[in-house]
Length: 129
Image (cartoon, rainbow, N blue to C red; front, side, top):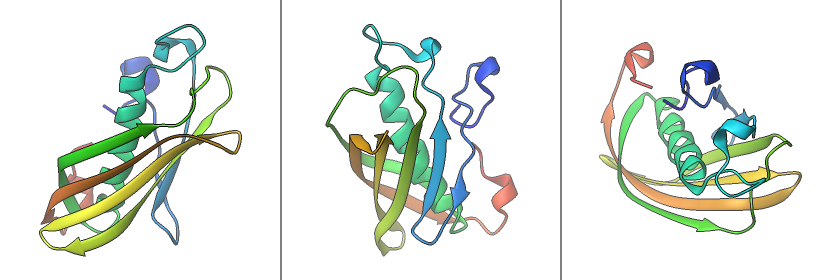
């Protein structure tokens, strides 16, 4: 759902790996509105969870969310794009600890910490998005 094209009911995310983890840009358009001029909190939760899952995909691990703790810092406004980032903060396979955040215009809007159960996935192209 997170990587499905926006016109097909998805969020249209394209994750890129970097030295710290993964990142993607999100178009904060009207279709994701909750309260006026703000992105719905459930969409923000999905962004954070998807980023952490893709961080594991980048390590050839298929991850399943065990616990997800989200903190909302500031409203995510409609209009300007947002950046979602995630990184692994600890690993004792099969348990992985991750952190993620959503930023917009250099302002932290939401952050999350999560634990995932992971399975080695030697074929990353087979990972379900």
